[in-house]
Image (cartoon, rainbow, N blue to C red; front, side, top):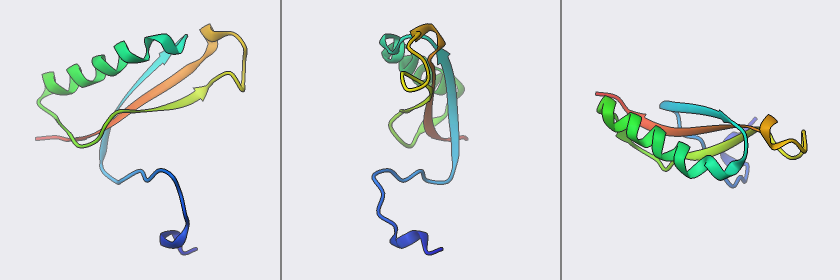
Length: 79
């Protein structure tokens, strides 16, 4: 398949990524994003992208917010 000619709204570049999973309401996303950014800084990693969220389990799967599972990823450069 010729993937270069497929239109998409998001491109996931190859490289190293930090991942953080959390369970529960999306209201905590801001704090969890700060957690992953601070962790990267503590380890001396350079951020190469903005953090983004992947909703592993969301309101399409359950109405119980305590069952939501969100992954936050950010592309990094390790030294």
